[in-house]
Amino acid sequence: MTQKLFNEKVTSKDELINQLNIIYAQVPAFECRKGCTDCCGIIGWSEAEDINIRAYLSAHGIPYRRGTSIHCPYSSNGNCEIYPVRPIVCRLFGVVEGALDCPHVKVEKKLPPEEARRLRKAIVDLEVKP
Ligand code: SF4
Ligand code: SF4
Image 1 (tube, rainbow, N blue to C red):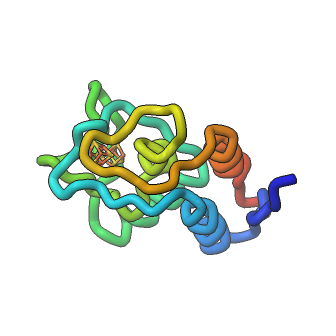
Image 2: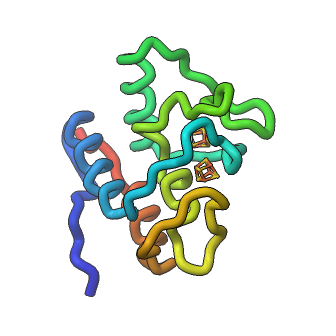
């Protein structure tokens, strides 16, 4: 049985962000090639990730944007404006067994698909409970 390393219910925004980072840390380390946004398109993120992204945007004076085209609203001149808080869908690209490879960066050990699903579900389930 897979060990559960996170709590689904948290009581504060800081704790939620902490739990998100615990989940993100379980994705194989991957650093995108500088200046590359080749795989960036329309993406979605969970409520917990939205809180994390909004906190980052607010701290960095970046406006909140909604995607209106086939481009991610945070892909700008070949850079990701929210790279430190990019959602799990971006983090999993190129690191899951049997899924698409990144054409530029390879990881030594990929995640089994069921593990990737577990992490995605953990993030969707994560919420602040008053
Ligand atoms: S995952 Fe690969 S293709 Fe996608 S932005 Fe990063 S370096 Fe570019
Ligand atoms: S959040 Fe960043 S990494 Fe993800 S699609 Fe947008 S620009 Fe690309």
